[in-house]
Length: 335
Image (cartoon, rainbow, N blue to C red; front, side, top):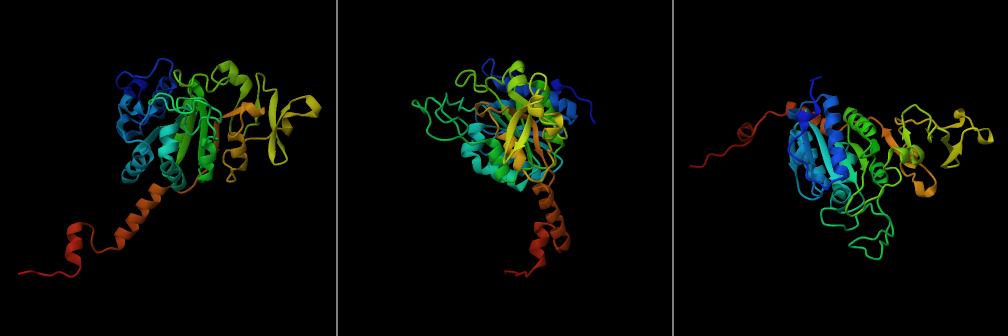
């Protein structure tokens, strides 16, 4: 592993609003990359359009800001033609799930070996405050002055519906856990999706209260870890148990409940039923918000299989370049 520092990945002065979650995430990404030890010249950061997609300008690696919604398509191409490149794809909730929605689901379905990051602030920030595909029902914005009349996408639900094999979630200003899930995404072979929850301080401040503070997360979030019981609370006094086809919050010590009754997280289970239930929990329905690596399952990757197929077909052909192709079959000489 190459010895590198976070400063080696930095480039320029980040130009986001003071307090924007993008600042937190960028610093966390630099830190995570340094700990991974992959040198900048072996990394490509591909972004779309939006506030979050300016991130590619602040990376000293190979980087490209593409067009609205197309980051996943271009990142896929970069990975397929250069399998040794570590590719990070950065999108916002508007860029990635609206105009880029089809690219998003098919990249996950194909299982291209990309590290996909969705910076979700539930708003269009760059275009000055319109509601996005993840804005909650009733949300008042510039484009919904009387409140939205539609339900939002849940990124985890889309991911699992597209047969996603890796899903993790963190809060942008929670450095240790953001770095942790980014490292897990890098180690995962296949399409990994990290949802980063963050506020837009101008148009949607407080989007993720009360879990945007360390104390708030102790009471209103649960850090899931493979092989560990699903406990939460300031003193891990609460836990999750199976309740029919759903989940239920219980308190240890009440009604005879002990730690043995608490569900143990299995991030590697092929069946995603429990993963989806964990990812869909929210404070509004009396549950903690799940943070950490929720799903991490191995499967063949698209880029690996495409390159393997090319090698197999090439080995059987009598020609290996365009000139040989022209000279292999019937040839006519025109005089």
